[in-house]
Image 1 (cartoon, rainbow, N blue to C red):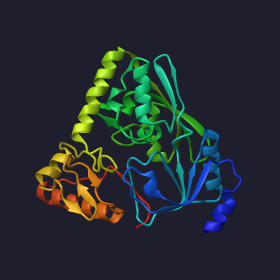
Image 2: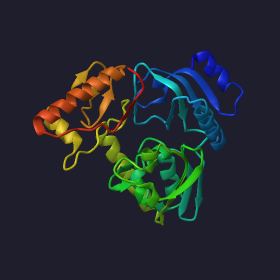
Image 3: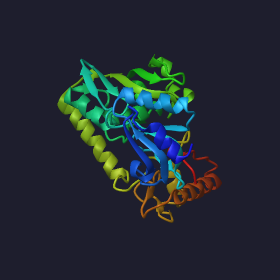
Length: 303
């Protein structure tokens, strides 16, 4: 569908903010990516569902994103419609030791809310970039904790536009994947269950983890988070370092000197720069250690 027809289709619809030919570099933590034909930011669950239904009825290619913290978007941008679930779908409510949140809620906001209510068990997530919808989709985790440890239910929109609620076991959580990935579901809201704890102790743990992150990870530079998944029996960052690749640069992309598991954007890197650097890293590690590094960042869009 051409740009004119897209503009006509989405005009005067209850679907939220609509941006045409929007540079995706403005919506990813990598600060990389060409224009999306249409980017829509729903401001309510109703608008999100309306948008998805409209796209499906018109057989439009559609991509669902959160705040873009683990995306590498092609320099040619994205065709069809990108739906960004973030502000406007970020309501958080606490009921006893349970917290309900919408899919666009930031993980860090939820961890702060848990601390404020002296609820323990979510400290590991403090500082993980991204939204709760994305975190549940990929079973995000750090420092010994994962979403599967705290999630009790997830409401989703399925491929037939039905709203379905799944419990923890139904979600098929596993390393960086879940039922959401398997069935192309759209997360609407999540409920987690924590335990009563001591505010000062929770605050101290979160402070310690934040210091570990800032001291060991290149948070001062644009990136998509950990570039590679952890290979069984190894650590990606150590393999890359042992292969002599620390600081290796290609165009505007670089293997972080602070943490070799991150590829960072040091000078207006293109997607092509990053992909070519990733390829060099993968080949070198494979040749030296016979270990295949699989990307953890999601690579989408066109060259």
